Image (cartoon, rainbow, N blue to C red; front, side, top):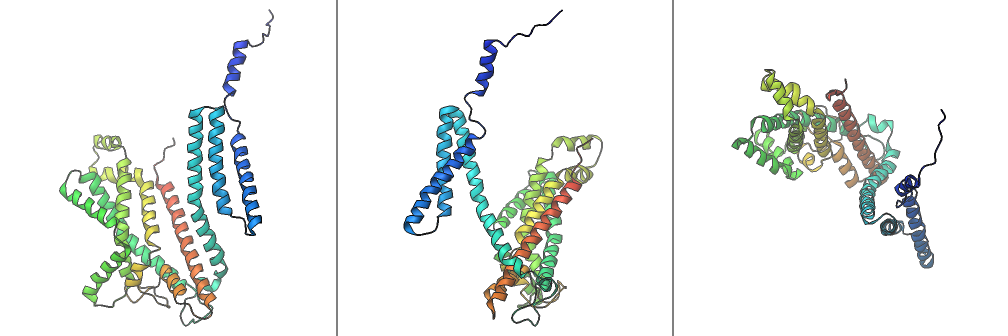
Length: 365
């Protein structure tokens, strides 16, 4: 018995053809984007040549983006229909908005790296500014001050913030005390950082007298700024934990406090860690409250409870605003300090991701 091969019917061929018609090819949007860049670039090039000025790069890119959005919408409407053209228009607008948002980020990173990296040296990371008038010196005292003050602020604020969020979500539903705490947290979220510094200064001045400057005062001021961020982020993460997990634990006879410790918190640990790192990233660059509370010094100080402490934001500010001779040395140290602060924040975020990945609940079998 032999099998005969029959060619596909006309209806099958027409069906397969209809699936591929009415769609732009994959290279179509890229071709439109390239044509927009070239045409608008020629236009701006002619204007620049006629006026004798340099090419207006921002104007070229912005007008090219507008031309691309208009062209892709028109071409898609003619080929693919109105629905697909609107989809391509919205996609293009979102992409352009993302690129515009990336411009200041890339610009700041590029500026800080190009101006700060040349001033990085072994001396910068191994010495302080004690007895240094012009060139030389380093920011070791500021780095240690930033680490110690921020670490103390985290030790103060993280337990308070997490326990407050646990009470609000697990115990305080519908209670007036919880409503009052929520209101206070909302108010604290919007207070200026200088107010937190004044609060910490006034608190310690009551006991130690006016004019006091201590590292722990800066930690308290930063903790006031961190607590509402930790509370809010932890609240949102705890709300995302399914109630079925709690009910399953209760059904097995597990107490509520143990359910929170063994089920709820491990499930939300990744989000909680992210919120904690956001709060640290917010306060680690604060300058105004630390100027009032911790002050500034040119010497090393490892004791939070004795004497002034220097921090990287304050070091950057003082180096840039109080330039001596040569001015390039002071400006270079200021940019190097800013770059160091950015690197510290980046390392903290990497550590947070590793912690969240390690402690997150395992979903695999």
